[in-house]
Length: 139
Length: 331
Image (cartoon, rainbow over all chains, first blue to last red):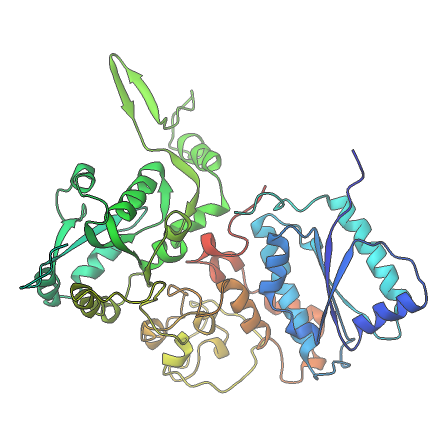
């Protein structure tokens, strides 16, 4: 059987993480193609519903990239994201999903190399976890 | 049907699934207005109140009943059969109460499985003596007789997940003021006017909108359970650290719980436009946890506060797990 290639949904904030991803691209840094990026204006605008919907639809991992603490373009959106993610990580195991499938990282526009490294790491981690147990079970 | 001259009486059926029958009591709680109800409609099926049999329902033709109420979660093959029968025989079906609307408390069974439940109930409880591990069977032969039982499903479902539902009346139990609104609805039906499909008989706002407690937009640095603090009777419970589902719950109940200083548990389900009540609540809590100067709080401190929330699914999805985005435990 072919090696498991996870599908990872990435919500990247317009001002930092998305620009970081852009820099990784411009710098021709290699990272696994498993990430599907959705650009959002702020990581704080990622509703927990979006994250749960991604898992329901079979995403093997969900990545959220925001600005470093104190750097949020909208002052405090990233702090709210941090708390949402922490709450979700507490909720997911009760529903049979590993909290490691959800990852939040602070990545600035200058950290192209870090973006590539984080995504490589996260993809490896999801490969170890295996497919999302929800896949095919959604009703 | 013949409706000329004197308006003919409507036919009303009340069926049930996995229910505590609190919904039946709630119908009676409309007190003397029950007389108005029976003036408008003949109750043709209501097993809780009178000796009705399934055959009483089966004898009706397609669409012959005007309105069917169904309360309770759908969890057995028999309950599913009743739901389908009511749909076939009725012009309109109304999901009555939180269980039928969103899955309700019995819907929390989705956190476990039939096998686990059977193992606990018929084997592992200390007072159980069942060495052969005999569990309920759907069919068993006793001599020359065949005995049958409905099948217990692995998961509980809201009525919408089983049949097409026209109207919703949430609440656990539905508040009397909302049940009374059924009377004008029935009167309209008698004149041939049905409310638009999908109507929810409740408010279009949240419980917070109806709650009289004072909001000060304060952040919270601690999550308290109801028995741990004596709340200030004037102030918002959530801002005092008590997990109150108000911001993520549809209004219409008149905030009857918070008026008694008990936190909202979310029985009216998600507000309009929201699919997942728990996700909405997570958003709401995330925006008030911590200190005023958010940057000054370390992740460890936030983790400590969040640790005060012992059972996220039980708190955030108490009434809505079967209709949530992730609606059961996967294994």
